[in-house]
Length: 344
Image (cartoon, rainbow, N blue to C red; front, side, top):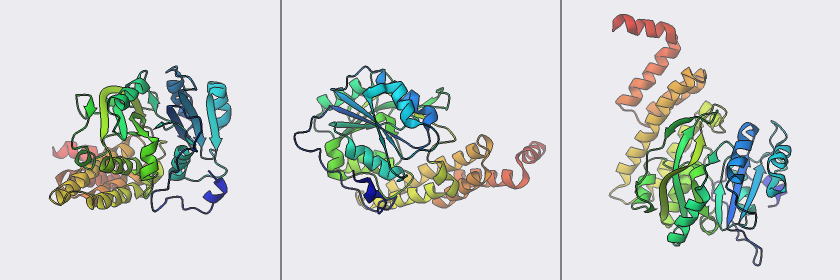
């Protein structure tokens, strides 16, 4: 990829960037594990080791860390210490932003199957074998994913994502299901490179770009799933989505995605699916506002999430929890709690 051209490109592309095919005659591994990183060196070693521990040779799997000009440490030094020459390292000349860095991950990959493993996530033993089985059993699919769990900054399990389907295989009605809410986090998902070549890379939004991509894939391809929990998605207060949360951009981006996918839904289901997706995200964001207030002590972020959720889908839950958050902020949580205890 010509990095000089990145200086002339918008950080959030307005249409899917084109993914050219791998040069004809190039030696291609089966797997490309691409690890985008930007100022998240704290968790990068765990991510790398979770892949290296699978014991898959370089003839079958390439592993590349794609660094978006991080400033929080010596990323290349860590890569060399942990992976030696087994792990490739690519650094952007300038910070190009999350979407352009993801685009770079896909463009420089050579494998038939691309796994974008964010540097704060992990995979468990057997992940790649299980995904490969899905691709072998269902060669017509465009992507596949496994079950996954949420972990905290210490790697402790927070909760397991509810099972999408208890049976292993190709998912039925997947487009209408995934259009209602985000049900797959990136560490659990693998996409054929040919799928990206047909559909292009991530675009349009700074938050929820993966959800938009999963919907786009579901519009054009069948998707297979294994219920085995073989991936780990980390939740922590330094997550790269934090900037969009602080400004409320996350809610605006989700609204944009919902309005876009609405155009692709069947006429008789369009309004219903749109309402469900707005409700699901609004209720998620309003609950998240209390987490930002109590655990992360980010009052402004909490307020923006609460107000945004009530705007996105005003119902009993979002209004009750949103107003409750605002009262906590206005009066102070300790005073508010004593007041509630007195009147209850």
